[in-house]
Image (cartoon, rainbow over all chains, first blue to last red; front, side):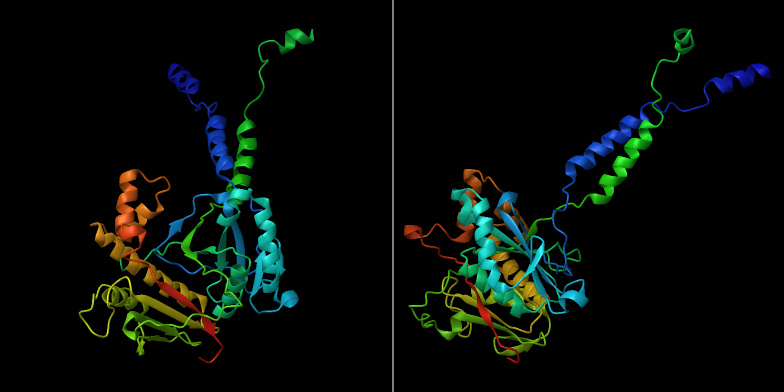
Length: 157
Length: 199
């Protein structure tokens, strides 16, 4: 009996020496894929979904613009607002903002600036159109309506 | 003395290493957001010249496919009310590919224009739904010209570095192979400035 006991005792625990390695592998994966969010979104932002999507190739050319109801309604009111970078702005400030964004790019790439419009699905077309007029004014004519893919695809295409 | 006691167990206790790594892992798990830069691409028209009045529309009425949306998100397509947004895709395809057969639809794809007008009070959601339909209609038509489905054509369009064959195929589909570089199958989607509330 004592012989048996000794045998089982010797191989009882699982070697955990490789556990840190496994965890580190996972860790590195997430470290590499992580993009730390540089701006805090201050507006409600539920994007509508669509099917005919394109993917942007050059991330450096993209600037994001958010439209939606402010999350803090007591401070900013409940009307949809425009947010760029970290501030809420008025439509007339967009031209300036676009110029600043263009200045950050190389000279050859300035005309290719793409504005990604992240607009809440409950926003009205009025404010969207105001923004587009300003973007035309600022000569930033490439825009993308950011939309996640719709899952229930009834009409394949 | 001290040396003799340490002998035999001079390795770092690595048991807590996993815990430290776990903590870091959880931090990155929580902060990770997978960026999805995807959406519907669109190019705005150039800035209107204040010295030049807007050009008169000389197009024949049959060549314009009108979509109107009012502030209650109700649709008027070709002067008739429409409930189901998903019907627009097939209507647009029929309109563009008519080639003069039906006198109420377009003369040819080159002349055909889809005019889309919303109200300032319309929701952004319905705007995207309709724009998606229009894009889908044109993608399917372009795909059919080179024997592809709409989804396959979309994939071809999104390929960043096209091989010469792929580029040829793409240009054929888009009708960019006409004489003197003229586009024979343009994607004429005109988005008018929204009307004031109540329209």
